[in-house]
Length: 197
Length: 197
DNA sequence: TGTCGAAACGGACCACAGTCCGCTTCTATT
DNA sequence: AATAGAAGCGGACTGTGGTCCGTTTCGACA
Image (cartoon, rainbow over all chains, first blue to last red; front, side, top):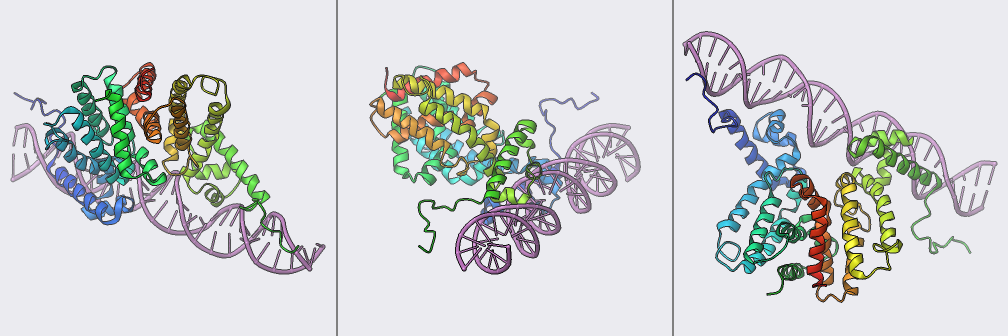
């Protein structure tokens, strides 16, 4: 044979120096966010801290939003794992409706904790193949387990929507609604959508 | 009498030159948005167009987000008027549930039309004393007319949440859900929350 | 109409996100 | 080991959001 033939390794295997830099950048980014807060992180500082040039930062992440999205994704992934294969009631093992309630509360807390990061990451595909997609898919699955009838995709989206940070901020920061009431309210919503218990 | 006595005109009556500049700025801003799109508007260009200095722009609007929020508010106000005192079924006169459905569809379309502006305005109190507040209040009122039981404030928020631009974008741009299905889905959601028909 | 304090103005200035392009480093091939 | 071409690098440079502060304008009072 003459050419390596692209085979299954479609998107090129990434050079070693590039990999090293990627890791250095992620480490530096995480550390910086912890040290000076999301707002305090400048792309210059990040590049300097990671010991690379500014161009490299933008090559890897495309933009400030992309960077924040990448950092966010890291934490997000852990949570997804907890949902998919962690202990009940969030993970598999509990009855579907209990899982749904656990999901709502857990997601609410997570989004509040990551508020700054989420906002800095913006809307774009930053949350790569999707925070929103994953959560919606999961709720959709639980709804089908619960034998709910109707446009499950839409209903799932409708259940996830009030957990979005922009909505939570309005309730918590502006209206000073206590957490307990949020959790209770969302549970009630879920009950109505599913159709009693 | 010796002092003018603040009377009811509490927050100082605004100087005439200031008022003139404010108006010039709003006009220029609206025109610029129309001409070059939200993204194309730079604060320098705006200042120049309105014939004022850059400092003045920031004095009035505080930030780019504030400016966009002000422009947005203008359109938003018209819509609020339509809801409060326009023709049925959006305005008063129709039965509450019909008003609710009309509200959902109308708000959905409005948010999609203003997508760019809303995003540029960001989350802060930019949408002054509140786009979100107004919509939520209105839905809360309709729910009470419908004799719905429970935490009406939360349920109202939950109904408004899927109409937020960030959620709509996900559905329309990424998942390519057709408008008809969105409207139908939201109607179904409303029915479930209200509790049958 | 002259004066005075306060509010508003405006443009020079600064910081930071994002671009560009010549240079370096890697990997595949012989 | 030498070579060639591609992939990656990095820092000087640009454009724009936002600040600062000396100057101007306003309007109240005498």
